[in-house]
Length: 211
Image (cartoon, rainbow, N blue to C red; front, side, top):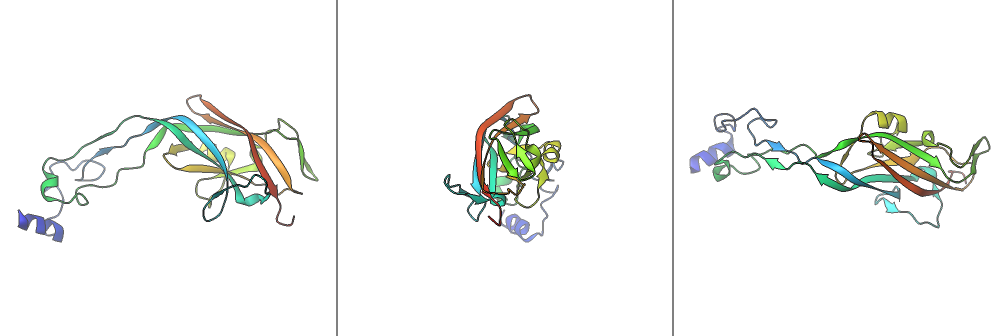
């Protein structure tokens, strides 16, 4: 037993079909995991100031318009499945780190089918752009999941985004204002199962770089 354990650790005996009888799973000869995907039961929203710590915003302060992000994440979910497969006897002499591989990330069953942003406060955005209450201003925002790659909302929705636990995607207002202003808007998230989530009265207090 001791020689076998030492041989496995040193790579003399490979951890392959010579040890495992089943090698047709996604991890080769490692245990096969069925990941716990989930169904979305609730979404939440929060506006953050983009910094090292992604701080909550100060409602009395105006921010440079490209530093505010509206984050959306799954705050309620229903697990769909949670099972795993192990091989008998493996844990007796092979360390867990050698007898397993990382399962894939869990995703929502639902995908993002659409996203709309509706203006709720009439204002002059620039000398050439005036926004009325009820205007669809989705085209003035971009979406990102990592603060590096940004997409138009239309393109982001076409990618059929699936939600992950404890991860967010973000909306950023992408039109420089002509003067300091308070933008008030509703966000509507549309899932492919026909469920809509509406978040009314979102507020961005923004300024340009030269204000």
